[in-house]
Image 1: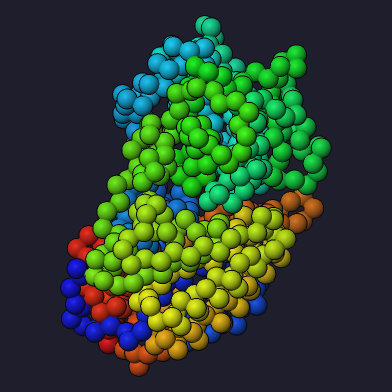
Image 2 (image 1 turned 90 degrees about the horizontal axis):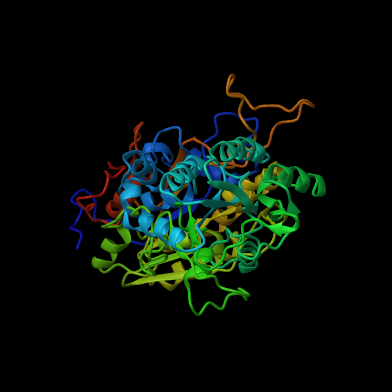
Length: 546
C-alpha cells in the first residue's frame, strides 16, 4: 500500500483526471482550432486556477528523439504508469540498429516459414514515417534482410497514412519506395507492393468499432479483391481521380495485378508480418489471421501462415504469440497501486479512446485491477467531421452518475474530440469539437464540486492546436498557391496543459511549473491529492502545498 503524504491529508472527495485528447498549447493563433473555439469554461479555468505546461512528445514520453510527436498510446502509458518507458518506435529502431531483431526466434521462424512454403513473405502496415504506428524505414530494413536471408518473394500491403503525416503525401512515400523495390529486385528476388488503401478505410480499425473495415482489408490483402492497377503509384493517382478531394487516409482499397491476376494474395505456406509497432489498430487484423474460431466476419478462406507482429499487441491475450520485438514491460502503474491501497476507481470514454483510459493507462493490460470499474460509451461509426461533438455529452452523463454514486475515490475520462476531429483536417469541425468539450466540462465540474473533489485537466498530446502545416523555413502556417492554408492532420510537438481545478482546499494547493516535467508526473500528483505518497518508481509530483 501507498503511505500517507505528510504535507497534506488529501481532498475530502474524489480526484478526477480529465484527458482532453489532442489539446495542445498552440504556438500561433492562425491555424489553432483551440484559439478559434468559443470556450468560456476553459478560458475561466486558465484564468482562475493553477495551470502549467507539460511535455507530451519526444523523450518525455519514451519516443526516440524530441523530433518525434507524442501519441495517445504513449501519452496514456505515461499518465497511468507515472514513469517513462522506451516505446515501440524506439524499441524497434534499436533492435534493428543492433541487429537483435534478426537474431530473434520470431524473425527466424518468419524466414524459415516463407522458405518452407511458397517462398513468399508479406508485410502489412502503415506506409509512412509518421513514427506513431510504424516507420517505413523499419519496413525497408526487413525487405533488405529478407533478401539477404534467401527469401525469394516479398509482397507489401501498404496502408496509406495522411493522418500522422500530411494528408495527401502518399506519393512522397510510394514513388521512392517502388524505386527502391525495383533496384533491390535482382538475382531472382522479387519485391513489390501488392495491395493497399487508406488507413481509415481498410484494416486498421480499433476497439471493435468498425469490423467491416477489417473485412475490407482482409479481402484486399488476402483474397486480392478490389480495383486493379499496374502499380501503387498508378493506384494512388487513379483513386484520387475517381475520388476527388479525398485525402489519403480515406482512399479506397486497391490491388496490384498483372493480366487481371492479383500479384500478392496470401496463401498457405506464406509468412506474414504486421509491421506496425503500436497495438490498438493492429489487434483486429491480427485476430483474423491467428484465431481458429474467428466469427467477426466471413474470411472466405483462412490461409495457414507463419504470422508475427512487430510487437505483441496485447500481453494479456497474447496477441500475437509470435512477435519480433518485445514491448516495454510496464510495472507499478498508478491503477495497480491505488487498487492495492483499497481505492475504488472508475474509467470512462467512448469506444475510440476507451482502450486508452483502460488498456494503455494500465500498462498495456486488458484486465481490470481489483476495485476498478470501466464504462465504454459506443462511438458513432460516421466521419468525425460530420459529428464533431462525438460522445462528449454521454461521457459526461456517465461521469456525473459515477460521481453522484459516491463509490469512487479516483476517476478518469477521455474526451476524444480534439484528436479524432483534428485528424480530419477540417478546421471548422475542430473548433466545434473543442466547444463540445468545453460544454461537457461546464456540466462535469459542478458535479466534482458537489462531491467535494478536485480535478486535474490535461491532454495526452496536441492536435487541434495546429490545423495548418507549418513552413519549415519560417515556422509560420504554410500556404497553398491560391493563398489558402495547407491542412494538417497530424499530432503536434506542442506542450499540453495541466490545470488543477480545486475549490475545496482554500487555496492551499498549487502546481509547480518546470521546463522538463512531462505527463508521467501526473500519477504522483494524483497520489498526493489523495493524501498518499508517490510510489518509489514514479516520477515527481507537481503538487505544491502551501
